[in-house]
Length: 219
Ligand code: CA
Image (cartoon, rainbow, N blue to C red):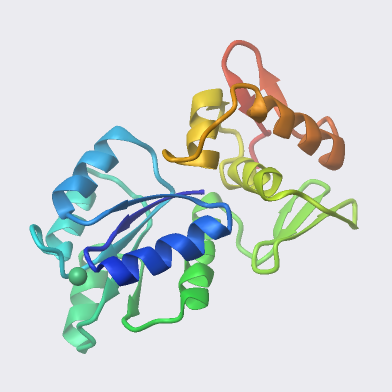
């Protein structure tokens, strides 16, 4: 999962960034609205976590800009303004969910999981795809009803495919989503993770698209 965090408060931003990257999510953190617009133009994200009180652009204005471009990217707003009118304005401007500061990071994680899962077309809290069943809240993975143990990278890789059934990912896209910008990537490590993942979930799940990349079948 690749997330964009727009938050100018260094403590809150660091806390969210640490909590999410620890779980193996790839996260880009920007502190200004203008930087967020650049990041969105340059790269694909699964979700935006957006603080409303930004130093340059108002968060609601940024949200309106994103929606004006026809982008249906899920947006979760963070706000210290706990008045009802601000929440209503946020939802009216096209936010998918919101959290009022201070919030619990576990709740943030749960809301992110729910938004991304719904957008991928899964209605229940468990992600079921052929023989694979994943409980994203506990990160338990089952194949044909048997629990399998995945490394952090293998889990992140599997979730990329499950969140985008049918989509072909290039190696660069998967590396960007698995490692973000700051991690060192060894040139063949993606192939190694795919190889290990196929051994655990069965070789028929992840297809190689010759000369392009990898995908799983559409739902
Ligand atoms: Ca702020």
